Image 1 (cartoon, protein in one colour):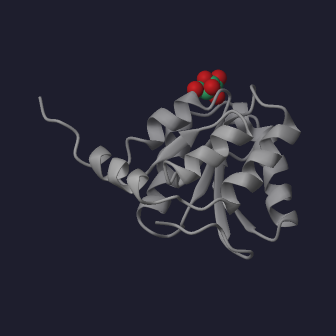
Image 2 (tube, rainbow, N blue to C red):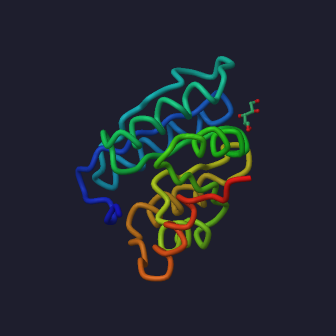
Length: 154
Ligand code: RB5
């Protein structure tokens, strides 16, 4: 169960072309908050395939290299679908401060997913801060997370 991020923590962040501009802004914001952003691409606004970036970053979190990370594509949908295929990852596509906070309190999300073509910049930056500093609630929420780890077989 990751605790809220501590100042100085390395936060990996990746995007496709649809999220590139917001990624650059979020990186600056992370540095301003005292975190250490680790850019895992993409390098510019040239067209790329979001699963490549989702799997690289999600794998780095699942392996324990990082406690948590941030993914951004145009809508956030593709990144969240891909990242949630990686075992141990709980990627939450969030839209506002409330969903960002709930994704930590109730879902212990270890990846925050944002839509670069959907969110206003200030809203997104506020969400990042909230998401990084909100603790998991545990208790009944942990029971539900445990259930997710045992999906029914058909
Ligand atoms: C890229 O055009 C776009 O499909 C991608 O950024 C994302 O929105 C996919 O879900």
